[in-house]
Length: 336
Image 1 (cartoon, rainbow, N blue to C red):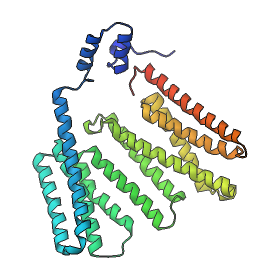
Image 2 (image 1 turned 120 degrees about the vertical axis):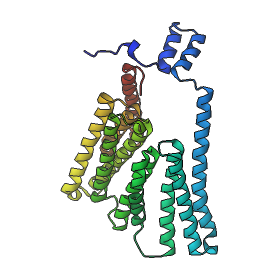
Image 3 (image 1 turned 30 degrees about the horizontal axis):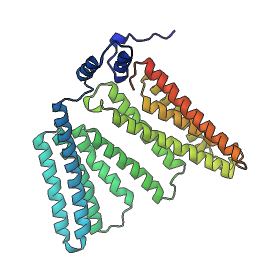
């Protein structure tokens, strides 16, 4: 028997407050006050903080873009020492400013993010001035290695997301240059890296680290992991349906089975253990992709009825998944 939570013990949600209005427990004036007390209606101070942060992020982003485009436009007219000096000067200024503000403040964290971006600009600039013939993936690998210390010091989710993206790009470019892109080895590497990254962030979130309590970081990592699972399914199905079982070496089969295990674990975890509506729905969508990859290959495409049937199947899967996740969300009091 499922034990429902006591509504009085649940945090208020918009859906719950609107339900009280519909049941005439609250009137419109009380509803407005309840939204203010619950934090759903931002105060004037909240709007000021929002605009300050938005303008700070926008200014930092434009400054970094300005550095990149400045060198792109004036490349032929500048001496190499001037190019290096300007980027190094900007890097030093942003780093010193971050330390001056303090890495515990949002201004310091954003300036540290600017420094991390300028590290990449400096490495790319050095590689263009002094041509060494190094592979492209080494730029992103070295960039990720250098900013690892900045990410650890900053405890800033966007900075760690930059590091995560650089590592993924390194893996993709490495196997692309070695001629093994979208083969077994690179998909194994992507699955292991993204799986460990997601598991580590999810585990640290359980320890209530303040800078990891934001919902967007683990969702981005989770969606990245699901995208890798989609690539594995597509690769396995393409090999099987195009060349037959002769192309299914043991490593490819193991990778596919491992992807199924990871997908089942993610779906179970985000639906039953620690509910997350977005990742639960995305996991269900990935499951249907795995199923439909086989189902649609076995259907005949000789008639329009087949396409109609396929569309109805996808529609039914989508509606069913949304209703299932919505039911769980309502059971937990409307929390995503």
